[in-house]
Length: 225
Image (tube, rainbow, N blue to C red; front, side):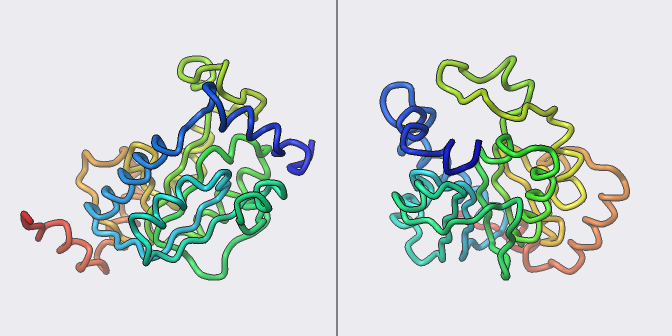
């Protein structure tokens, strides 16, 4: 089934409207506020955002209201969603932007792609991100233990979490709560802020951080406001 056939009006009515919707605008707003707050804490100045799979545009609405100066690019693979909510039509498995963004949001997208397409998408997300990535992808464990099957679209490619971690780890350090820091950004993380990493990746991260003294000072020089 193509994106045109699957992600249509009926799909969005089922999953984004009514009592069984997956996320409301206010819920996503709280998530966006949390991500923006964590970015500030980590010393990442968010001047640009790319959203992949923007759907009804809840993230964009929050940034337009609370961070109106941020350059925001919203994309979706669905022709219907792009017409309805004014997104650029892009397929992240086949497209990467010419210039990277401070924050990339990819919520509920990768599980709809097969292994090859999802791997390409992760490579494109890495190229698109020069700061933080917010990533949500439903895994096999989530289907078994976490999600409400009555409200969640379970017709997906259910992969193990390790499949994603193996492909993200060379490019990103897992911060937690869905946030991943681009290794190339050199964002300093306390040891317990992120997931343990292989010693080779730790050396790469240390080298990147050596050129990021401004970010380090942003963390260690915090003052009460």
